[in-house]
Structure formats: structure tokens, C-alpha cells
Image 1 (cartoon, helix red, strand yellow):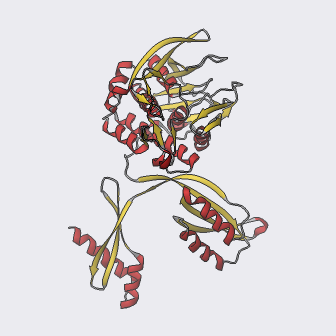
Image 2 (cartoon, rainbow, N blue to C red; image 1 turned 180 degrees about the horizontal axis):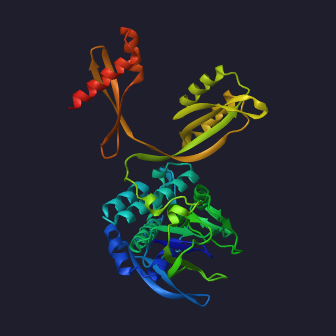
Image 3 (cartoon, one colour; image 1 turned 90 degrees about the horizontal axis):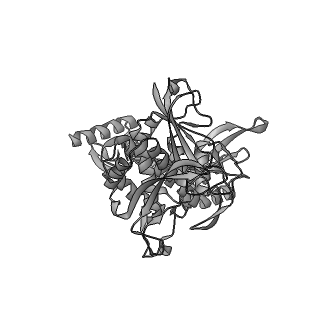
Length: 445
């Protein structure tokens, strides 16, 4: 028997609504407060819960009162109640950052969570949710996730909402989470970059990442916040109708506004048999979010693709060189069959988001393509360094790749060095490769 939860979101979802539903379902507020205090921001906020009514129905409202926060212009706010305004996470050029503003970037928030000694699952989920949110914001603004910053007010809200939700889910000892389809909302909201349409761009990007089913409930308000979207797109197994389950408990979390229908997030908790094994639509479980922490570096990166069937193949090599010259990280081709049974190539370019326009310019200028597809993906990579070793045939550079904790995971002699020595001494390339690798390992012993 698995313990499962279903998030029913008729008026959307936000982080404070998740907290309210969890407290309503039995998660002690004192437990959340004690664990959140380990993050080192206890002097900046106060967590409290009230029973409120939404359209005549009672639900739990959790408040994050900001005690000593600063806005973007540096003015103090005491006892501020957050309403999930969407100026809390975005990119701002350094020359435009004001000295009075307090910014928290993704690496700082990750360090806060890692130092807090939270329950293992809560820590892993929190890190993954913040990475998902930063990846989405970075993709929208065309910057790496690490450069996305959270204003102090918004950062406190988001940290408490995300980490508190993960602590509550862990306390309930859930195995799987399901979520309903999400309402789009409508209208516009005021954000740091001016007025934005609802859903805001980061929420749409999160929907895209998980192929979330959406619909209009006729309410032209902001209904799903980036924090709420990041939580469910990271942790939900699937979206849609509730799973077959034996219902055991309901938690009701109230939103901040009065709406035409009750602004309440309903958390269904129950037991189900073999859902994980039998669901043909299963995508991932909560355990999938528990991953080894920070073994590699990570960033948002752009991928450009185009199909070509009418270009002299000699030009492809020149295109490779031109793309690398303007900043491409990698370029490769695949043989494909195209319309009218013509053979062609799929040309793929991987580049930093800020180099996307330069690479696109090269493709249009140097090839016969009439269109280019753009996607934004997350790239992880290992730190690497070159170490020269002296062999009987000459010097070979050894590329050593390490995890962030220093653990060596890959060691390879540099191809060109081995090839040059093989030609110079008329020795097999693989022999030079073997000797170089053996020499490096002997030096480590």
C-alpha cells in the first residue's frame, strides 16, 4: 500500500496555499517553524496560521510575515504579508542593481538549504524545486540559472514556501503526488519588467517542461504563481484526474484573495495499491527527486537545430569552424532522410544562451536553411583540468574530470597528443594512449 496525495487546484496553486493545506492535513506548524529556523532567516519572518472563510467554506491560511525585509529600493517593510507578486525572481544587469537592494542568487539559496541539516527528502526536493524555478526564469530572460536573483522579500517568501512545503510532504511520508489540471487565469500583473500577461512567462515555461494540461475557469486573475508551478512540476507524478485511492484525509489551504469560487487548494491524502507499477502514465515519483547533491556544474543552454538537403557538403566543415568561432559549445550533424526522399543532415548547435543570436546569424549566412528551431535545455558538466605526464615517447596531456567534491570520475589522455607521438615514432595510437594512461595512474599511487 502506497501513501499518495492529490492536489486539487480549482483556483490555482501558490506556495502559501500548499503550506495551508499541509497544516490543515495535520503537519504541525511548530515543526515547520523549528526546521525552517535552521535556514538562518528566523529573524526575517514569522510564520502563523489562521482559519479563514472563502465563499463560506473554512480553510487554513498560512501567513509569512516579513519582519525585517527590504524592497528593491531599500525601504523597510515590517509585518508585511506576502501575496506572491512576481518581481521576486528575475535577471538584472549588474550596472542596474542598486546598492541598497539585497539579492539572493540560486547558489546562495542552495547553500542555505544544504547547511540547514533538513530531512534528506525535504532537502533534495527543495534543491530540485529551486533549480527548476531558476532554470525556467533563466530560460525566460536568456541567462544562466545561477544568475537569476531573488529580491530579499521574494526570496524569503519563496524559501519558506518551498522548503516548508517539502518539510510538510516529508512529514506526511508520501510516496506519490498527483495534481489536477491547472487553470490559466488571465489578465495582467505588474512585475519587475513591467506588466506581464497571465500566466507569466516563467509559469508557461514550467508548464512546457512537464506538458501540463491547462484550461480556463473564467477567472481573469493570476491563479498559479511561479513558486506553486515549480513545486508541482517538480514533484507531481502526473497531472489530470485523481488516482484510484482510499481517501483518508483532506487538507484545505486558503489563498489570499476572494474569487468567484472558493479560493482553496484541496489536498487529498489516501492509500493506493501498486500505483507506481501499474500506472501506464507514470512519469516520476517523489523518490526520483532524491539525487546525489551537486556532483556537477549546471547551467541553462540553448540548442539550435536545422535540416539541410541542398547544401554542398564541403560547406559544412566551414560552418563548424564559423560556429565555434562565435562561441558554440558543440556542433554536430546527423544523416537524415527528408521529404521527397532526399538525403540530408540535421545540424545541431549547442551554445550559451547569450551566444544564440550569433550562432543563428552564422547558420543563416553560411547555409541554405530557411528556418531554425530553438530550445532551452539544462546542461550539466564536470570540472576538468589537464595534467602533463612524461612517457618514453614524449609528453601527453591527461584530461581529469572531477565531481564538485573533488572525486575523480574520468581520466583520458588527450587525443591529439597521442596522435602526434604515434605518427612521430611510428607506433600505434592505442599504444601511446595505454602508456600515457598507465603513467598517470602510476604517478597517483
